[in-house]
Amino acid sequence: MRHAVVSVSLPSLRHRASGKVREIFEDGPNLLLVATDRVSAFDVVLRQGVPGRGTVLTRLSEFWFGQLAEVCPNHLLTTDLARMPEAVRARADVLDGRTMLVRRVEILPVECVVRGYLAGSGFKEYRASGTVCGVRLPPGLRESDRLPEPIFTPTTKAHTGHDEPLTFAEVGERVGAETARRLRELSLSLYAAGAAHARERGILLADTKFEFGLLDGEMVLADEALTPDSSRYWDAARYAPGRGQDSYDKQILRDWLEAQPWDKRPPPPDVPAAILEKVAARYAEIAGRLMR
Ligand code: Q0N
Image (cartoon, rainbow, N blue to C red; front, side, top):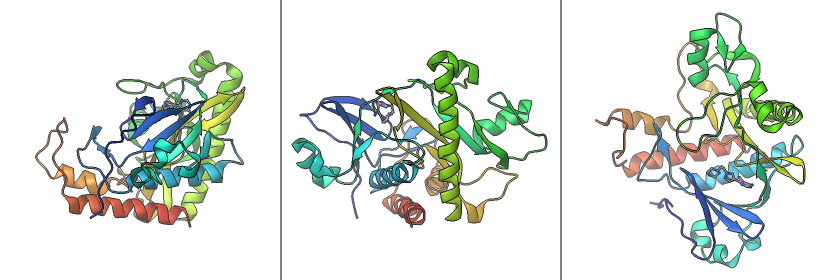
């Protein structure tokens, strides 16, 4: 069985940050984003990784950056190890296919969330108040219903804990009114392009989150783009509004974990290799569908 890459050490490069899934290193003026095979479920990172998950996330980001480049420029320079430092090329065995060399940009302090369907915290708020992040929606919507049109629901970027909703005015206070309008317009355009492409291939992008940065005064799409880690993916063939939907990528893992005697606090149970392989196959299936 293929093994999962759950840690990455590059002692000759300056390590800048660690996410649940990705590691960031510095390379002169640029950054290296390495997507590991780590996976979280119920907000807990599992000890076992999903073999090849990081390479699928990297391929998907690269694919979407290419698809979306006409809507907005992005931070990606290359995924080709030949154009990366020797320290990276020396570890091609683990890093090939999971490393993006990106331009360092000035990240804007807003998570640009777009929702096309009524799910998660959006549905909870709608049920309580008829609004989603302050945006009033028509009455009578059911859980998972498609929205009359996609909505921009920005949040803070919490370093610890959970992101908090921001009103559009609060986005303006953080980045300026002109930039706030541009973030909203770009986010909605990127989501529309991505959701249309995915829908034609039987995948619903229920919602997603973008990060933007400034490079020489120009707005660029940063971070990852429309991956299952930054978006809620549903299988269109199984879509049935009126209830919560299965996660296209993680449901196999969630179902197995739900069947264990586990309180969803660390430490999580050890996940059997056969389950991890099923999840790996699911990621390959998603990439295969989207990239055809
Ligand atoms: C940056 N984050 C938060 C990895 C992503 N192009 C860039 N320039 C400057 N800074 C960043 C980027 C990018 N991308 C973005 N941290 C640094 C998102 N992280 C969370 C952890 O995983």
